[in-house]
Image (cartoon, rainbow, N blue to C red):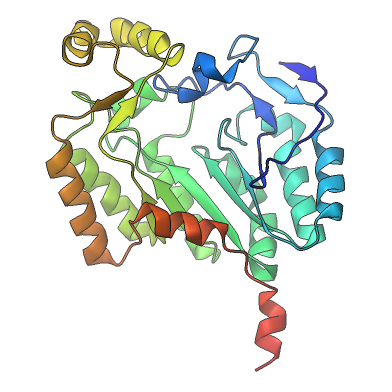
Length: 288
C-alpha cells in the first residue's frame, strides 16, 4: 500500500475509485491492462489520501443531487477498506448531502456498511452491484482466489434484499473452456432469482484481454490449468474479444430465464435504472 494526492475524485459521470490496484487476485482482471497507466505493482494498492475531502467539496458544489458510483476500476471493499474505511466515509458523505449511491463489489465486506446503505436507500436510492462469474465453488477459488466465493456473495445479496436494498448482478466474464456452460449460467441465474435481483448485466459470453491483463491471465492458466493457454492462443491469437464457442446458446438461455423471472436483462435498461436518481422517498410518502 502507498499513498498519493490527487487533484479530483469524481468523474464527469459522477463515478470514483478511492483505490487503484487490487488484492483480490482475479485472473481475468481488466484493470491490470497497460492502457490504464498504473505506474506501480497492481497488488501495491494506491490510496488516494485526500479523496474524502475532495468528495465532500465536490458534493457541496453540485447544483442537484445524483447517483454517485464506486468501484468501476477497483473494488471499494478490498481488504484495506477494513482498516481505512474510506468507502464508509464516502457513503457517510453521500447520506449527509442527500446523494444516491451505487457500488460494484465481489466482497461480503459490504455488509459492514448495511446500516448506511439502508439509510441512503430510505432517503434517496442505493443499488448494490455484485459480480458473479462462477457457480462452482472450487473453480471460483481458483479464478477469484482472494475474494468472497459466489455462494458467499449470494448470501450477501439475500441479506441486502431483506434490508430492502435493490441489487444488480454482473454476469461476467464467462471464460471459454472454463465456465462457459449451461450448468454455470443456470446456477448463477438460480442465485439471482432466489435473491430477487432487479437486473443482470451481461455483455456476452466470453472475456476481453489487453496488453497487461493478457500476460497475467496466461500466467495463471499455466499455473492452474496446464495446456489451456495453448488452446486459447490457437483459437484466439492476440484478439481483444474472446467469445465463447457456446456463446449463442448461452445468451439465449440467459435472456429466456431472465424473461421468465421478470429480471431486467437489457443492458441499456439496467444502466438507465442505475443512473436514475430518486428524490426523498420519505418526503414523497408523506404527501399521500
